[in-house]
Length: 225
Image (cartoon, rainbow, N blue to C red; front, side, top):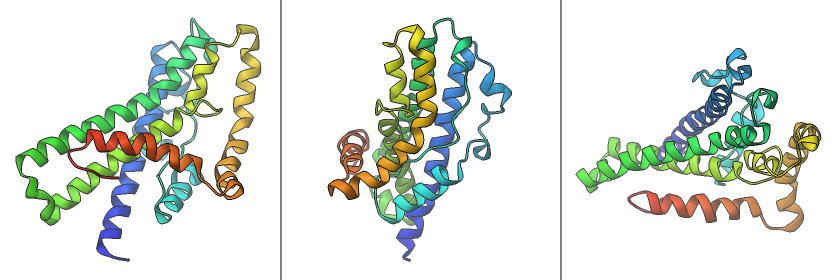
């Protein structure tokens, strides 16, 4: 393994842990502000990554994707929330669901602003070892956050994008919808792994490169994907 590979893996792991932690805390914080104390009582408003790690989704899956040089995404332990605390369960569900992707967009934006400031001060910084590692981290952090954002915006249970669907579901059907979300995750993960092999094409990689990859290149001071 080369030094560049080690630097890439280190930046990717740190970026993913920070991005995923911020994503999950944003869910819990949004729910808390809407009147739901469930996440706070469960200790999920903490910025401690250990509170949110899922062994497969936070560790194994992203490491596998890194080794395969595929877009990095994954998941943490879902932040618990109870829509019954919301004044408007459908609106509250949508706000809580979209808070995670929005947090990823904000973190990606902050990384890009820092990159622009550093790169504008001296474009030759990438030729220095410390400068190269810094820009590599900022680029990786940007990509990882945007990958997580667009991945979670897919409107399929149990991803965050499915919370938008709840806005259009009649109140009497909401309990059924929430129960479906609880059992949809294993099916979705099987689809992610099996679908590319069945059809000979990875629609998830194509989607993430077309959305997150292109947006990262627009936001960052130089092309990164």
